[in-house]
Every structure is written in C-alpha cells, then in structure tokens.
Length: 457
Image (cartoon, rainbow, N blue to C red; front, side):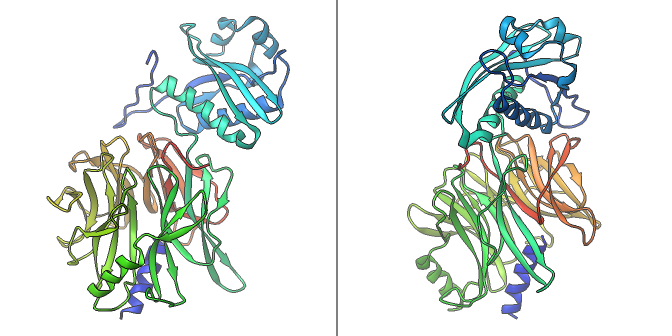
C-alpha cells in the first residue's frame, strides 16, 4: 500500500479419492494428520544424501501446508534396510500414531535422479500411491516439490501447489543516502531460492503472473522524463524466459490515450491482470485525475474502455472462465466491489458491508473472491461468494493487503506489518484462517503474486 501511495503522490504532484481430507472452511479446526516420511535410501537400503535432502524438502512442504505433522525419525521402529528388504510392518508405524507412511529409494547417476516411492495408509494397509519420479541435480528442489505434490493430491484430492513460485516487491533502504530501492524477487512458495527479476534501478510495484506463468506484469516508474511517456508510472510485461520486457500498452495504443488526455502524457497505468488464456489483460488508467478500467487485446492490438472516468475504478480481475471482471469503484461515494461482463456490460455492486473494499481477486476455483478491507482503522483479509454474500474475515492486522490465491484455491498470500513503522512482511493463510505462516524476506516484502500451478523454471 505504501508503494502505491508513493505512485499516486508522484502522479498528483505532476498534475497539480479413497481417502480425502474434508476441510470445513467456515469454522472449526483442521487437525493435521501424522505422517512418517522415511529418508529415501539407495538400492541396498543404505543412507543417501540426495534421499535425505529430498525428504527434508518434502517434509517441510507438507508441514507448511498445515495439514500434516511429520513424525520425528528418531522414534522410527524400522530402519531403511528393513523397509528395503522386507517392506514395512504396519504395526510398527501404527504404534507411532502414523496415519500415513512414505518410503522409497533414490538412484543418482551422472546428474540424473530417479525416485521410486510408496504412500501407504497405515490404518487400512492400502498402498495409496506407488510411483517413479525423475529429475536432475539442476532441478533438485523442483523434484522434491513434485513428490510432495503427488502425496498432497492423493491424500486431499486437491491439486498440490508446492512447485509454485511467489514474486514480491522487495524494498531496501540505504541509510547513507537515505534512498529507497525496490526490486522484484522470485522465490519458491516455501520462501527458498530467492532470485531477483529487476535490478533495483526503478520503483516497481504490483507484480502479476500470466495464466501460463511465463510472464509478469508490473508497474515501473520512469523518472527520467524521456519520450512520449514523460515522467510516468506504466505497466510493463516481463518475459521470464528471456528477461525481455515491453510496455503492456504499446506506443500506438498510447498515442490514442495521449489524445484522450488532451495531448498530455498518460502519467499512470496500473493494477494489471492477465486474462486466463493470456490473450487479453485489464488495467486501470488515470486521465483527468480519474481512473477507468481498460481491456487490452494482444491478438488484435486493441484497447477497449470498459468503465468511465467518473471516479476511481481500479483493481480489475478476470473470473477463471474469463466471462466476468470484478473490480473496485468509489462511484457510489466509498470504495466497494463491483462486477461486470468482460465487455463492460451489466456493471453492478456486489459488496454490501461497511468499510472500504479494495483489491478483489477471484479464486481459481471460481467460488470465492478475496479482498482487503479497512473498517474503523482496522485492516482485514476477507472472502465472500461471487454474488457478494457470505462475507467472512480470514485474518486481520496492521495494513494487511494485496491478497493473492494459491493455484489450488486453498491458501492466500498477502502482505502487512506488525505495527506502524515495522517491517513489511509476507504471510500465507489457509481458508480456515487458523494456519498462518510468515515467509522470510531480506528486506521489506510487499505485493506478493502467486504463480499458477505450471510456473516458469
């Protein structure tokens, strides 16, 4: 929120299953299932460094989901050799109250890794999963995440999300120069393996993934004042494979906007979102001090105005089927959430509670909308049904904002602070609101964006 305020300040200054977990998401508490994960062994049942490191990541993934509790390996009653030679004696795992058992072997040859493992229901004795997974040393973490995904999906009957990424805005401060630097940082969903996507030479904010995970749209502020854009904050698209970037609204389309803006540079385009198929995107554009929502068709290179410049219409987001757009508007006097068709027709207000509504995002499942809300000096992350009913707070805190769904619609990532002047942090909460974890970042972390299930390597 702070970076967005900075951008607005700049603008106005320049203008004057067999077994499946059943999770109740309205109330109650989800009790995690105990799971025994034995470090993958080599062909003879001996220790394997690769097997141990793979299982450390798998255990961490499953535990961070809030649905599983890995059992301490120090209390195991069977060794790796026992499992390799004879298979498990389920009584030895039942006395540990294990609900599930995972064991298997790993073969590492010339940089290639093959894991063969089984997932066993300790109570019934059923082999729920028996599978071989292959990878390489270069994508070691991706291999571990994929194994965790297999286990998660087989037990919960929901798609796993452990192989996804999160991109966020990292803000660092130079105490000597008193300057602020922002970068886009990409991490695994567990907070590991940070990789910078921008170099910190620009003010950047609000990254958003494309539906295939190959591109990111974000705002960058140009303070050099060169060319037709002048000093402005504009939406750019970054290709994650090549590192190349381009303006979302290209030069020919921008010329038409400049004419609409009385020949003056359009000093802010913001709040971008891709359509599910990637052929279109929506964003908000400020003209004459008022913001309207536009749709960009990349195939036909067309810019279509969907709402009028009568107030502040912003934060548009497509429905998963691409037929509707949810957005925020203050057209009725205060910020509320509205819905419209993708051609701009049938615009209607769907939120009905008190407070200020902002940043709505449609769940990938299509059943819920998450948003941030401010009421009476308090800040909340809230979900409601797509007709505006069933509004329910998931979590609250100081300046909590910028919610974004996991690819399976079970978790929400957001940013906030512990109090005034505190570090901005990124957290993940599940739909029950009972399981919250914080992601460690080097600098301040804000505006997180969660990748789809298939993300760029």
